[in-house]
Image (cartoon, rainbow, N blue to C red; front, top):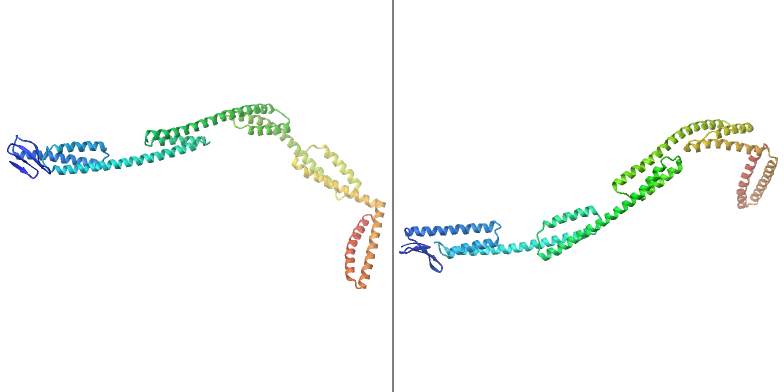
Length: 409
C-alpha cells in the first residue's frame, strides 16, 4: 500500500483522496505501481488547478459573461465533486466558492452599470427629444434641419431602453421631426407661391421697361424708371433663375434709355458750355458800366447787352445763378442810379427834405435851450433826459442834411 498527505492506494489498487468529510474513492488502478497511480491522479488535480487559475484570470481580466463564468465554475465543481483527482479538493471548492462570489459581485456591478447606462441613455434621449421639440418650432430651416439630422445620428448611437420607454420617446422624437418637416414644406410652398407672384409682377415691369427704352421724353421716362425700380423692389424675389433673367432684361432696358439720354445730354452740355462762355463775356461787358457815369448811355448799352443775352440759349444749371447774379448786380446799380437821379431832380421831394431839415433843426435848437435852462436851475436829471432826446433828434437831423445834399443843396 502507498500514500501521501492527500491520498493513498490500498492493496486492491483502489485509490482514495482525503477530504474534510473523510476519504473518498477516486478510482481503481491496476496498470502499475501505487506510486504511479497517485502520480496520475495528482496530475489530474494539477490540471483542475490550472483550469481554475485560468478561469479566475478570465473573470478578473476579461468581459466574460456571468452566465458563461457560472457554467465553467459548475463544470469544474463537478470535476472536484466527482473526486477523480488527488489533492486538496477542499481548497479547490473554496476557490470555486470565492470565484462564485466574484462572479456574482461582477454580475451586480454590471447590473448597476447597465442600470446607470440605461438611466444616462434615457436622460440623453429625453434631452434629444426636448431639443427636437424645440427645433420643431424653429424657422431657421437650414440650421434646424441639419441639427435634427445630427440628433438622429446621436440617437442611433445610444443604447436601447426598455421597449415601452424607448417607443414613447421615439414617438415624440419622430413627431417633432415630422412637425418641423411639415412646417418647412408649408413655408417653402408659400415661398414658391410668393416667388411665382413676384415673377409675374416683374414680367409686367420688364415689359413696360422694354417698351420705354426708346423714349425721348427724358424727364418723364427717367421718373417712370425710378417708379418701376421702386415697384421692382416691392415685388419681392422670384425664383433664382427667373430673377436673374428678369433683372438682366430690366437693367438692359434701362441702360438703353439712359445711354441715349446721356448722349443727348452730353451734346446739350457741350452747347450749354459754349453758351456759358458767351454769357460770361456779356456779364463782363456789362460790369464795365459800373460805376455809372452817364446814366442814359449806360441804360442804352445795358439794353443792347441784354438783347444779346436773351438770344443766347441755356447754360448749365449749376452755373446759372452765378452768371445771372452778375447781370442782376449791374441792373441793380443802374436802378439805384436812376433813383438817385430822380431824387436829385424832383422839386417836391427836395422841398419836403428841406422842410423836414428845418423842423429838425428847430427842434434841436429848442432842446439845447431847454438843456441850458435845466442846468442853470440845477435840474441835472431833466437836463440828462433832454440830452438823450437831443442825441436822437441830432441823428435824424444829420441824416436829413445828408439827404438834402443829394438834391444838390
